[in-house]
Amino acid sequence: MPLNDLLGGNSVLLALAAFVILCVFLGVRIVPQSEKYVVERFGRLHSVLGPGINLIIPFLDRVPHKISILERQLPTTSQDAITADNVLVQVDTSVFYRITEPEKTVYRIRDIDGAIATTVAGIVRSEIGKMELDTVQSNRGGLIATIQDSLAQVVDDWGIEVTRAEILDVNLDDATRAAMLQQLNAERARRAAVTEAEGSKRAVELNADAELYQAQKQAEARRVQADAEAYATEVVAVAISKHGLEAAQYQVALKQVEAIATVGKSEGNQTVILPASVLDAFTDAFTLLKGK
Figure 1 (tube, rainbow, N blue to C red):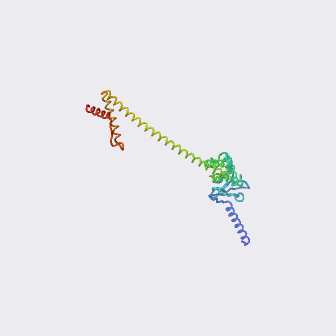
Figure 2: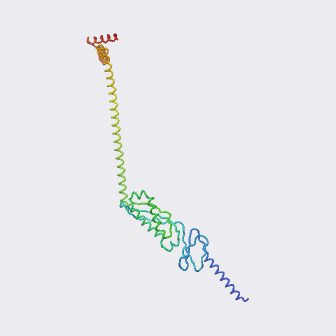
């Protein structure tokens, strides 16, 4: 075989081998687990390649878009909003999402991050406009859930799944912050005044209860004393009814003896002069005692 023919045949084989290798290289696509490939045929969407080994038709199909399906976080964005009670607030938000249908994301939206940020800003302004400032501060979890649900409905046509939405901070302007601080101080002063007034009221109530208790005890003592005196009078009356005048004279004599004893115990009275009538009373009392 002539050398020229041999070299020509080898060139054809080499070219054929190179073409086969090129076809294999262009026709086999190994897709990583974290990505999806969008395949176009003659400029139109043909298919989406999932993770693993995939085959396409060389020179007819091409892969213009390689889309990561990992979860993404939008940069923190701030937007102004006005609450239902006309307070201007600045809300810092962050959104996490991942692409689930790359063909929608590629052919329906150009700047996906910008579109999501704009949508979140509109939803935040709309929802905060329905709430008062105190509700925004206390019900942040409910506001986050509402934003996430509303955002999920909007981005569904873009082949996106919103995994999480966060409200990082709610800031107030200086004038509103100063007014709220003044209101807080006034509320603290009011609570202190109420506490002091309640303490004074309680002290007055306790003092009144003590005076009432003292009056009740004094009344009970007077009642007991009155009962004792009534009982003594009743005993004397019974004795008089039984023994007549002698019992009465006996009681009078005892009272006189008690009076003289009291006078004798007083300071500076060492000698007691008794009238004759008193001595007669003693004599009558002793006579009655002997008679008993």
